[in-house]
Amino acid sequence: MEEAAALLQVEYAGSYQRYETGENRPDAPMAERIRLVSGGVVTLEDLHQQRLEWLKIRRPEMLTLFPEVREAAP
Image 1 (cartoon, one colour):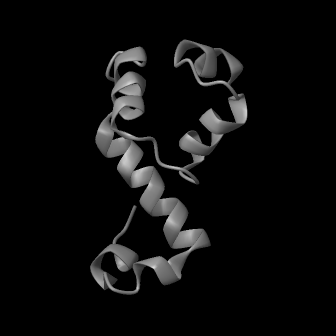
Image 2: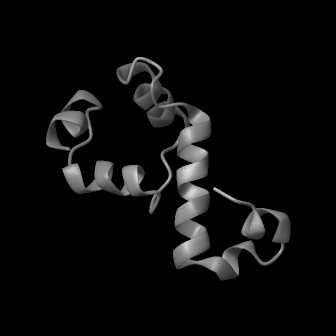
């Protein structure tokens, strides 16, 4: 985790970990850096899906306006 944070020039490894778990979503430049540093293994869609999964589990009320997202399979 610390190595990935360093490659992405993220000051705190915990910040990177929150991107990884979906707790935080990276802004567009950071998302692009993640895609590039991973050699395309991590896609923008991966980041989006990870965030949705985090929200479904920990903040389902945020998805009440979008039942199709809330109920969609991972």
